[in-house]
Length: 461
Image: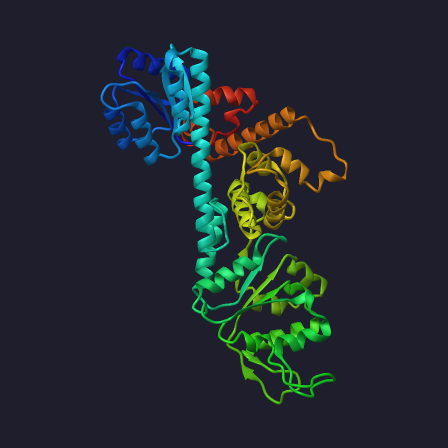
């Protein structure tokens, strides 16, 4: 979270400067400034957009409502708090109807000021974060389905780009639900073969007796039931890419014939007198340990090395949990659009809970979970209550903590994990950790003491 800005706008100079001093004392992590006219306020906002605007309505020159209208037009995430005297509450109510978020009556009490500043800054941050997630999700949807901003996902996309530029066989391996098919599609889409077919075959879904014919084809009369010629998937994918999904499950006889095709570049349909040249790029994928299968004698070692020319590992979701909020927002939006229902979004508490949850089924499990949220969550906001009701794991009779306790635990765990990861990356440097996190140094040290996290543990050398 970047350092947030507050702008106080009031033609009473002493009053405006007094508010600045109060806010700066209570919120040292915020940048606070004052403007003493509507024109000056708008000029300041051109240079630096505030997150929270404390705005007097009755000023000479430009009225506060005009300032608010222009400010919200340019900065829709801005939270506007209007300042008004006791005798003009109706004016404040009118301002709320026109876009203000809250109002304060003069003289302003310090406790009320603290509340409004804290909530207003939180609101602006969440609005901005929601817009950012929607933008990233939209970009992900337009540019492919490999959603994620983490270093792990960036490396995966870089690997795909490098692999797509050459024409060797590709071996994709990773846990179930990590997006191996999406990676294969991306490799094909970025390759020189992009305008030719991309064909995926799920090897274990085809009976052993039919798999050879499905892959390589057959000629009429080659076996009982072969009443016509059949091209086979290699021929269907000519000039393009053939993805052999779950390659570890193909039977030994088909492994032998596949090895010959990869060695010679020639396919021979069953019953054919001669073979034909096969111009196909092979992408093989599995969630199994093929090297263990080689040791067990159930997979050919020479075939493995023919397939494993270029290696791509799809990461488990636990390796890039920082992508969960973006993935969840994208899947929720996608599910709502597919169903034709009102678009929904996640509350901050729900995002934290999803980030801390274990996902053994990886991205596929998260996608299915968000589909359930699109169906069963009432209203436009998905909160922890909906997550618990949609969690099939706990439906079997697990006990749930009270909401406040569960929320406190989620926030505590998130804070400990986030700051632990950040301290590890900065080598225990408190100043750098404060800068990256957007938390003030003093506040950061208080949080570390509260969660019993010692920065010294992360110091290098």
